[in-house]
Image 1: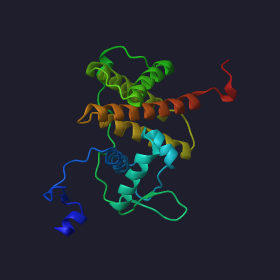
Image 2 (image 1 turned 60 degrees about the horizontal axis):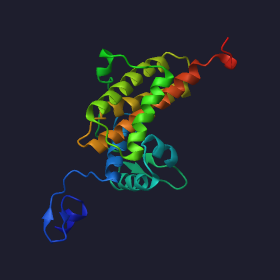
Image 3 (image 1 turned 90 degrees about the horizontal axis):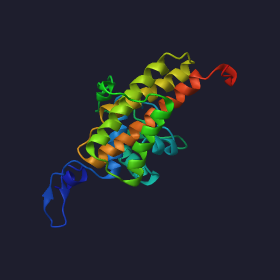
Image 4 (image 1 turned 180 degrees about the vertical axis):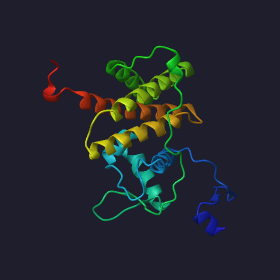
Length: 226
């Protein structure tokens, strides 16, 4: 029994009874699951270093304390490995289970008018991030429209980002952001409202990052608009 407790197959309760643990819904475990999904989809491939914790906290829309706890969980289960004076890396031999890179789901918003201008995309992204930062739960239809708008915007921006000439390094960065956006869009619907709102905020961050790439790449040389 002690061995089963040690490897987390079962867990001891204060009453002395043992039980098989159910799905973990605490913040560090949810963050760890999302990092695993991103790694499985190739955003952070085996052998690659994770972004620094400030950048990772930004893209996952979280604070550093639960993120640090999540990363420790991933080190413990063998997904990540650490080395002195280096960022955490995805273990080359890690077994990663998660969604494969996939096309964006067909956005329901294509049937209605959505604003795909930079201002329109920024507005819907700010709305999604505000819900999460203030822990507000919008009405389901409003949340659904926000997700559809972000999904349509991500699809639109991905096509523009891919069609813009760039160096090999820049192209790899673009691919990673597109992959992050697609994985988040494909997994945005979660079992609870708060998790869905969090993933929507993560989707908004990825769409914003894509927008920044498109705006920078499409800017006229020398900054002239003539």
